Structure formats: structure tokens, C-alpha cells
Image 1: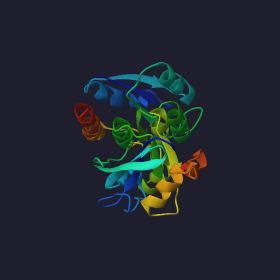
Image 2: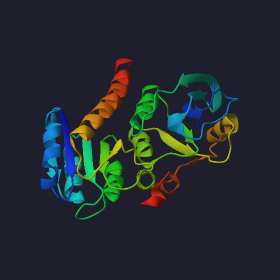
Image 3: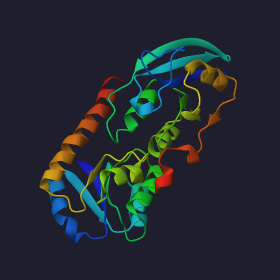
Image 4: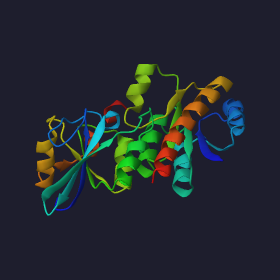
Length: 130
Length: 126
């Protein structure tokens, strides 16, 4: 089970996205504000955050800066309409796994899962070699 | 530094007379310098692991597992820096010199500065 937060201003728009993630054994918690999502990160163990580029109280990138400061171990994905270059500038140094569109579809989830599993396998390799 | 292990992201085969890598996550090897009583005791090489976008915690875990106490970088992102801080590895900064030996000697002599938050990569773009 992967415990994940979706931080986005419009929950309804992402219901299908969350349902698709559930098929891959994700447990999803929704927040529309960055401050509420940060409180969840501080108080509970999470594996992953999906964050929209714009939240009701801050940008998704400001949220990630705050998240990295309190827990750099959590992986993140940003739902964003930025161009590749602008996205790179906006997220440089934040260690974002991937950019997904604002309303990801089934094939985006599949691509993300493959990439995420690759990252998890790299970490598992380290653990096995301990 | 009196005692401990220093890691330097390096190009090619690394080593004390080798060259530093500009991006720690994409370096070829890490040169490890073990320090005892303020003197270089031993130098080892550890190949880096595969680096993927967002996989910043892979080198953090790798260096923590190898009991590194201090890392010298020419640049680093906010997330891996926070990761190194979390696992107790001090991160030092020198963006000028490409050679490994002089920056290691300066760290041992206490002449190298710990990296500050305004020296991390990317912060000015948000």
C-alpha cells in the first residue's frame, strides 16, 4: 500500500485519477490547501504527494519548498501545464519525480507507476546490499 | 575536521589527485577520504548508482550507508541538501576549484564553509 496525498483545488476533477491510482494499491487523501496537506505530512507517514501547480493558499512549488524542508524523503509529482523548460526552472532542486498534466488520464498513471517502481527498486537495491 | 569520512563527487576514476564532478547526483564515482587526527589516513572510491529524475534520496542513502560525515559539492538542490542534513551529513561548498585535493585539505583545516540555503540550485526561480 502506497500512502499518498493529492493536493489540488478541485477534488472532483481528479476523482478519476484517484480511482486509477487505487487500482495500483494507493491510499489517497485529498487536500485543497497547502497548509492542510503540510499538516498531514508532519503528522503522518506518507510515501508520495501529487500536487497541483496552484493551491488555494499557495502555489504548488511553494508547497514543495515547505514540504522538502520538513520531510525531504517524500517523493512528489506535480500536476502542471508549464512547458518542459519552465517546469524545470520552477522545480529545480526540489527533486520532483515527474510532471503530469492538470487532469491526468489512465495512460499517464500507467507511465508514472512504471517510473515510480523504478525509483523504489533503486532504493530496495540499496537496502538489500546493507 | 579531526576525524571522519569525507566524500567528494568525482569524475572518471576519482582519487585524491582526481577531478570533482559538478553535479553530485550524476558523478561517476565518490572519492572517500578517511581522516584521523587531522591527517588523511586512507582514500577509497565508490561507484555512483544510477541517477533518475527525482531520485535524489538514492545518493543520500548511499553516502549515509557508507558512514560519510561530510560532503563537498559545487552545487546541490534543496531536496538532497535537506536529505543529507536529515541523515547527519554536513554539506560543504566550493564552486571554484575542480581539483579534489585542495578542497579536501581546506575542509580538514576548517577553511571550507558549510553550504547555505541561498547557495542551493534553483531557489531563485520560484
